Length: 111
Length: 151
Image (cartoon, rainbow over all chains, first blue to last red; front, side, top):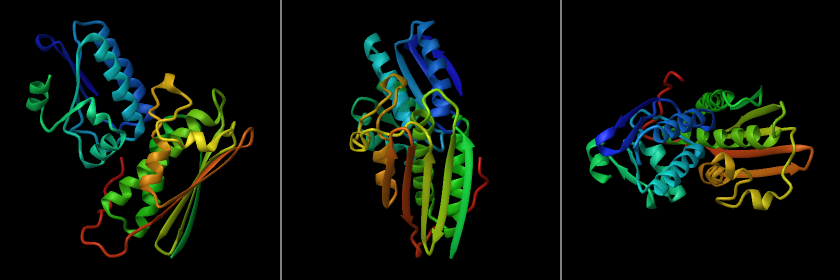
């Protein structure tokens, strides 16, 4: 994974590059939360364009970050999710609280 | 066609990936579509994660994946010999989780039920849990999932 602070947008950009399951979610959660806590960021953008697999652990990860961003007055935005991932996101209903975008530019726009 | 596999591993989360790859590779003998293959991977990942997180609490134990192909049906049993489930009905309710502190979404059984054709859960407190799942792989299709390098 890659994690970057977009200081002017008060946003942490998390690029997930591995399969997202219970095992990998732990590291992503730890690093994302640490970046949020050590910066002025209130929003989180997840880049899913390199993710080929996600199970319900990904939903737990997104919901947890949504709760955190909400407390800070920010948002969670996802972009680049493929068909398999979109299906699980829609099944969970979190697309009602987290914005799904196609591209990075759309995600920035959605903040 | 008839075939059987037995695969056993210790309840470490790094084995979740391995288990779903084994299941998908086994099912690939029936030439599933990409969608069917990804449904199997997801359902197995959910069952194995449940066994790893809930099966043995903080102790070490083995999780087993049995696979069987009969005709164009693939069947998997994910089992552990851990603490078992006291109330299966409650455990299978959408959004129910016994571990909210671990950010579990409670969608595991819902995903298994929607992605597989049949699911059967057997459990006894103190004796362990087994989740049996069946999926019929479509025979006639236009685009088959080419056997990609697993990673």
